[in-house]
Image 1 (cartoon, rainbow, N blue to C red):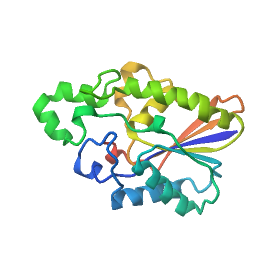
Image 2: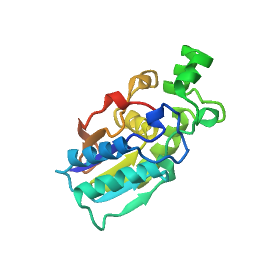
Image 3: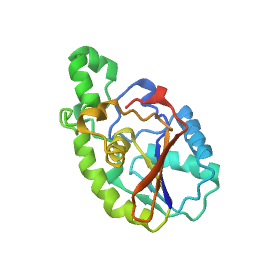
Length: 210
């Protein structure tokens, strides 16, 4: 058996201000660093073999906090742009509640939660899925089949895309999935890569924001 550990990065400085971040390279807030440490404490019982982070600093900083908690040394860390956050295009850097006020509830929710509604000059969750899932299948799943435990320090939408695949969530139900900052999902897989169980630790639904 192997374990796949998914950790959404801790609260960023823009999360704290309700600003859409996307590909902007924003650091963790102090609260976010604490959330990352709590995520580390939640997985102390798991021996990690390989780590994947995105090319954004909030993903990497989250792993650094986890690494310090777990006293990890000489663990392979792979930087994968494919698992970065969704591009929020023209909405990046804007306060999400002001966007809601300007464009209305219906359009706001389509941009924020829907499966295939792209933001202007940005991505939809479907677009994120198209880059995350092939990367997972060709680069991460083979390690899990080799009985390696893998940690992914990802983002709200890259992890939503992956969980959609792992949990076989239909397109019309993915809008209800929220993953809070610092939240941990743990999947146990057999030697064929089939999921045997799932557990959520360090749940933080109050911070399920993008």
